[in-house]
Length: 489
Image 1 (cartoon, rainbow, N blue to C red):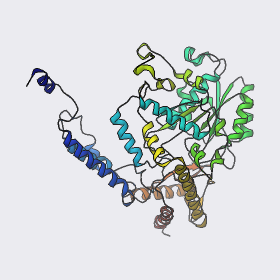
Image 2 (image 1 turned 180 degrees about the vertical axis):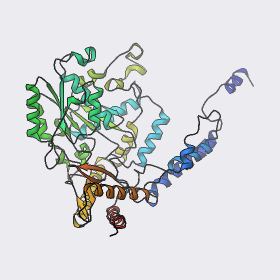
Image 3 (image 1 turned 30 degrees about the vertical axis):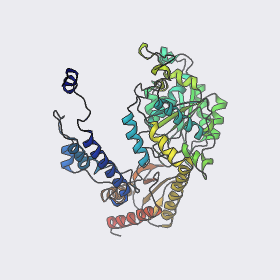
Image 4 (image 1 turned 60 degrees about the vertical axis):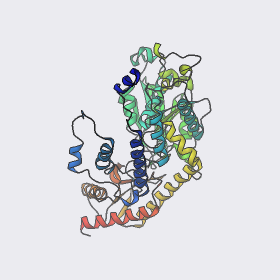
């Protein structure tokens, strides 16, 4: 053996010594994944993690090697056997998507590709821009608008609100900071706003007091008259109204603010118009319900989540900004080690200039592959299907004397409670919480709870392409069964 070959053998690598063994195990992993998804309905929605598994997942850092097949077996035994459950057709807790197998393949291929989407001249960066362009087209934004893929809705909203701050600040807050503001900025949203907006204004240095919560009407939409009054009050008090945050689908009930009316207010008052569309922006794809988000295309910025109604595997969010210059101007920094060149690897766009991350994963591929495979029309039909399912559930609730619906069903979120007879608020809350927990612990269904107009209730968010109407029939049957057992009825 020559000297170069001996040196090569002595140098370490993470690549396997025997690729054929890895190939065989990889085929098994894919087979297991297909089996797991194709039979997901046959398993419990959720199971409590046993003590032994919890103990195994507290083991100290490994110092010595373990065969890959054994590592994979540990994953099967300790992780995939106890999932959150959101791929299951009867998972309706919080508001998520159900994922899709093609997207999972995209995640794998993106990891193998290994590209850093901070930017540069390579195909993955071009695909990232293409997916952003597709999302701009879906919501009706112009081709010259900007956007960036991010982790999810919280980060997408932060991006939009940060651009709004800089655009409406007056002084250069990037250079001088928020103390340079001539007057405190004010942002406005309904009292149903997602909590991420509070985090955003705090991170932006404006403080929670900068976010003024406006009362909602009987449909749980922002009250336009109250909004106008709040803006006038703040101007009179020496504040600087800066941004209206509209919600296209509140997290509690799915209520959608009147986007056209809010766009008019923003234009008339000279405010930035941001739409939190993480739940409902993709209604723009719906054949039957796209009118619910009329006015979305007038926004200055939109936050949306492909990991919800596009069912991309976590995580996948997007911030879209109408003014591309304002977007880049909020985040761009050009250090000496990331100078552009006219040719070569550094000749492409620096995508990190549109957000906070310099290191960015290849999120676009899983979205791109699923959109190419199914087409946007299919996703639009699935959105309408979920809305029809929510209305079916609402009808079942309205027909059942022991169940009480607490909010209008705008899209695909249903809020209700089990209340077979008059009971005080604490008793109703305890009863419904126990029903929710038993549904989870028995593996029947996963739903969450919330408070609407001061009343505790159960909440079913149907953002799941695997859900069938029969699943909702079963849910009502099981709630009535468990409720009867608990109340002796």
